[in-house]
Length: 129
Image 1 (cartoon, rainbow, N blue to C red):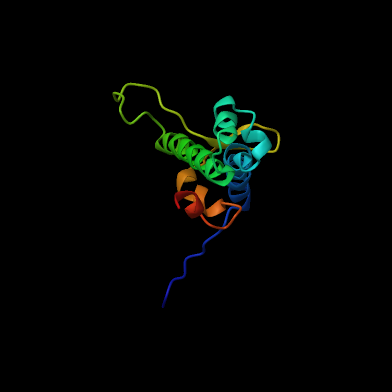
Image 2: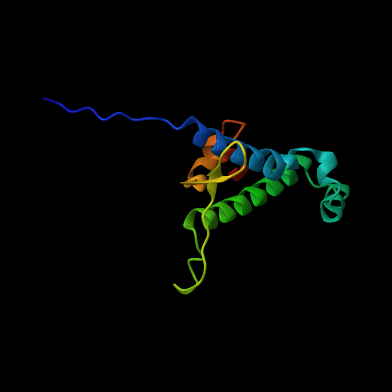
């Protein structure tokens, strides 16, 4: 007799990941698609005024932002500073209930999921060309 395992997808956990990582893309990475936003950075404005290709500058800023997001998410996923001693404090990102009380359910694997949630559908590949 074969035993079947039931697999349940926790839609609330998936929604929490999507909300967090969607905001990373929208507010941290893709904000640099807008040339008017880029022009708010004095160094970027000088590059544009000197003839830099706006598309290239946008891609560079988005790639840097994506790298920063990856580094942060890797630290969150690790739960500690991997270069520190074992006695140093760590952290754990957990879900909350609708009333904002924390649950005991950690949210992990954010770094791995970031590229999958790229709104452009390219998984960030377009930033490495």
